[in-house]
Image (cartoon, rainbow, N blue to C red; front, top):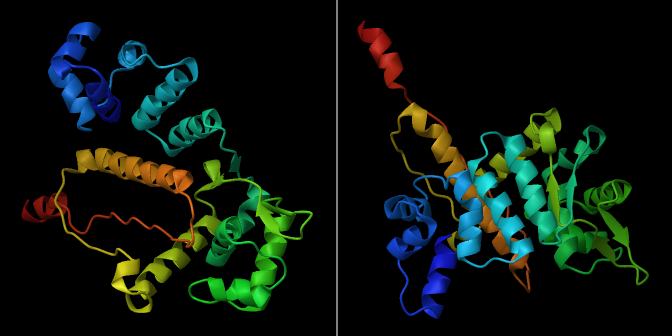
Length: 265
């Protein structure tokens, strides 16, 4: 909403949050806080805001899903609205079934699939293996291509080049499965090794210790989810991609005041 507002300011001589609030019969302070990411937009305001910005039918539908995506309280809700957003943009989205979760058995299956999306590959498995960081073996590269093909995530074109069939992959409701946990363990290990393996200009691994009220953790997780969504859109809309990156975001408690209070009772 903030981006749409800033774009509108460039095209209209006089426009402000107060002006927008007046047109929508809303509180200007609340609209400003929504634009700052401090509160959610009320669902009753979805349609009025769409009309204010003169959104077309498809744009209005995308805007509606975007608001509900931001308000989602569970991973399933978020995935459902995210899939609808991608469908409206014409982006295919594959939700993996239980038998397909083998895709997450090793980190390099995902890496190979992403590489095939930006690099024309036929049968040079040694070259494909060397594209992974860290390098995998040619045999592992061949196994990855075989698995991706059997899952119909890639297909060989008439020119012999393997092509990625779907853009985004979701675990759906299976994100707690053993295979996905194994994938997460492997990528966390890779993140640690990246400290020594990659030049700082090619990575961003930072740490910060913060204090929160435990009741606010849901809001923190929501901000992280929005950040991931922004990066996914940037990845989708970019051109000339020449590298595959793994993003891991870690947030976990290392101390509770509740425990201290229990000790002093």
